[in-house]
Length: 194
Image (cartoon, rainbow, N blue to C red; front, side, top):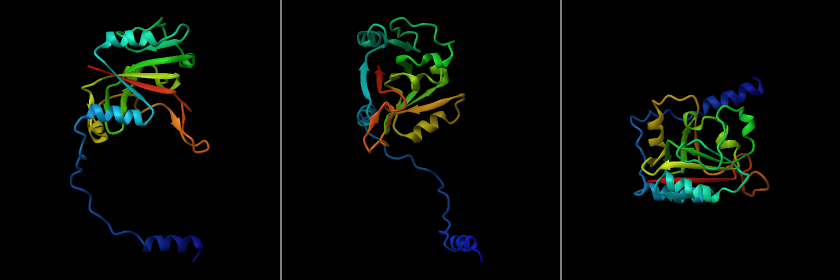
């Protein structure tokens, strides 16, 4: 018997006992206030949360923060910032100098502060990953408690591309220190509307 055969025989002889599948997967307990939990978790993972009454207030807020010469793109027609150009039809590589991208999210998840976005809202798939700073606009009523609830919402949805975005880009691979903006946006701000 070869070494390989001995190893495979030992693995086969030491298999764990079979277990029946669960009849029903129970959704875990949720926080009493999903909006507050969303804000706390987002701060913990390096993001910022701001509450605004409506899109007009958001436009004023973002225009105050924008400085001359920065390329700012908003995918939300009601949120006009600076001089939006004809970026939707451009080659995605030409978005490399976007300082701030403002996008809408379908819904957020309070347990991990992830926000679900699809290509329908982005217009260019690369936009939330190539910009220096990302702002996501989210209706305060569109926050679900857990990923279980999130997957229930998207289970039957049709989309070509979708992703959960949680916090700014980060890595802790380099000398065990946390680096924000390593391979994506340096900052993420979620604007809760409503």
